[in-house]
Amino acid sequence: NAGVTQTPKFRVLKTGQSMTLLCAQDMNHEYMYWYRQDPGMGLRLIHYSVGEGTTAKGEVPDGYNVSRLKKQNFLLGLESAAPSQTSVYFCASSRIRGDTEAFFGQGTRLTVV
Amino acid sequence: LAKTTQPISMDSYEGQEVNITCSHNNIATNDYITWYQQFPSQGPRFIIQGYKTKVTNEVASLFIPADRKSSTLSLPRVSLSDTAVYYCLVGPHNTNAGKSTFGDGTTLTVKP
Image 1 (tube, rainbow over the protein chains, first blue to last red):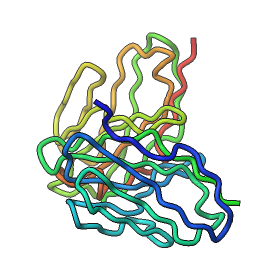
Image 2 (cartoon, chains in turn purple, orange):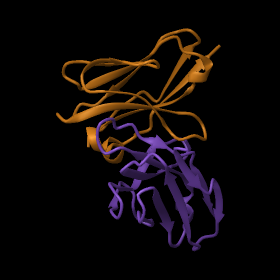
Image 3 (tube, rainbow over the protein chains, first blue to last red):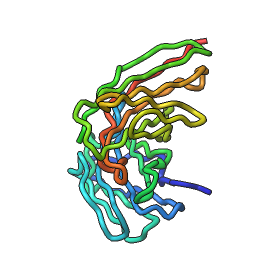
Image 4 (cartoon, rainbow over the protein chains, first blue to last red):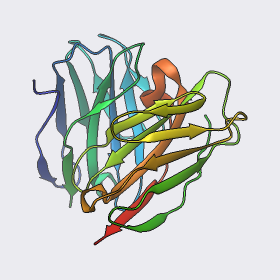
């Protein structure tokens, strides 16, 4: 059981380049989330989704776009990367009710130069 | 969203009990309290969740007083492998991880 898988694990981008981070979960969870974590800080919510075809903004959505075309996948896009987006990105998923335990992926370390 | 306040860091020794307190003065009636653990270069991992009084699982205990304005995570007999950052989250039950704020957490260092 893989849980939450993020692709890629590491990436270096030049300023202005674009890229997409992929998150896949195999637990049939309704909710999925994208967070960023800067050094020495907690996680900040970028965008989240409460189901296939739906997305919503979190605390720090500017500069990012997301899509949830399939229930198991949640994509995070950077259209024009900036050095301020250098961070570790975490994806998570959870069930819609019952327990609210969120399962996290291993993270993607992104550096924008 | 309920704002949480935790100590920035704590030190302990192997075998001791560690208590980490989180303040959440503006917790709402339908908010639950959830604690996560994060090791370096890994995603956070769920530890425990509660609404009131006391909750215990195989890893930790969570104590919540009647006014629910604070909570205490208790880790019994810690080991070196418990060195990590611990986050307290407060938010609605069925959208906890989506609507809650992680904050900067408490860095626990366990010494031999």
